[in-house]
Image (cartoon, rainbow, N blue to C red; front, side):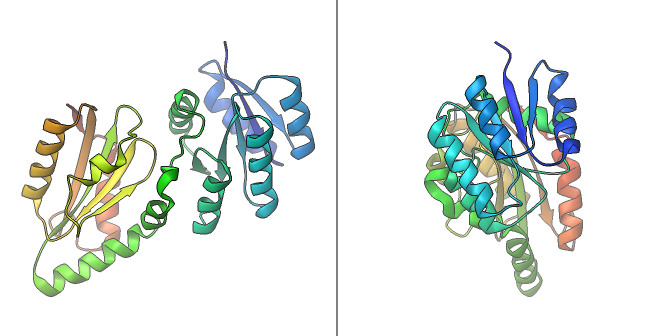
Amino acid sequence: MTPTVMVVDESRITFLAVKNALGKDGFNVIWAKNEQEAFTLLRREKIDLVFVDVFEGEESLNLIRRIREEFPDTKVAVLSAYVDKDLIINSVRAGAIDYILKPFKLDYLLERVKKIISSAPRLTVSLKKNIEDLEITLKFEDIVRKEIKRSNRTGSRFCVMYVKFEDIMRDYETIKKFFRETDYVLPISASEYLFVLTLTGKHGIEAVTKRMKEKLSERFSYTYVCYPDDGKTYEEIILTLKDRMSKPRGNES
């Protein structure tokens, strides 16, 4: 059966962008300009996923809660241009299964929606059982800048590693076991992680990935950057990481 995705947004432009991204892969995409239209459509037909913007704050959060309560088989995700820690955390607590930023690349949105549709109804991007980890993720820039200062002070190195699992990674505690207490484990989606390995060079990355390949059944791809070899400022490190994330090392198992 063709999945149906509804966009609840005043802007027709957002609806058309989602339709353009998903329609080419066979998704049925419908539009509701407000809450009233959304519930009329929800009662009329089976909708697999609802995208909600959170620009209305608490009103938008109440909409997410109401959809989850009245239509438990329908998933809800946030599609918003707002990057606000409290909004993201509260959206997840209200029942959102993902938080996607606008503007988005069409292929990126399609990939995320496929993951959402195939995931468990209440599995969330933040690994809902541990909301605090999402708060840590949002402090990524602060963490990296702090490590740059520490490295400059002590003459040490540190690395940032990006890992993408082929499927949703549910065993979060297992992942944490591969790292030291001083390292940072940052979930950025249900299948993607950033790791900041403190006081460590490239050899540390090699040791971690070797242990992961030996102990995990999940397949993954990865890439990394190290300070100061791959950048001497936060901006340089992020630019290098983004470039390498587009072509990570082949799937490992």
